[in-house]
Length: 152
Image 1 (cartoon, rainbow, N blue to C red):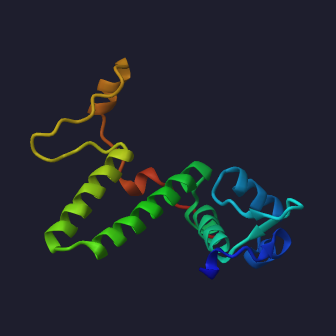
Image 2: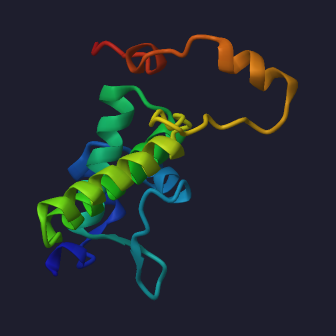
């Protein structure tokens, strides 16, 4: 597993990614990555860390996500990878379908999307007066909810 081998000091990692070293430190504070440390406390980045940082950079610069959005996108990426592995390892097509349906329901619930299957109730909220009003208001589509940044 050489992709987890700590290889690059922060200055080299920053150059590879065309990012400032301070940005890498910020992303570490945000817990997007956890580089290894030497006994002298130098950060050492693995190839897997570099790839994850490339993904973070893409989400910030090209998709226009803020750090909370990046955290959500990274979590969803991990869950989708696990789902792919679960489908690949399923013993039958029915088991794979059940795995996909269960994970999609959980992902949608994590994003606050109500269960639209027949006989299921929408979440009632936390009892605040504005919850019922918000439930009656039309929801934004995915395109409206995530503003797109145009490249410069």
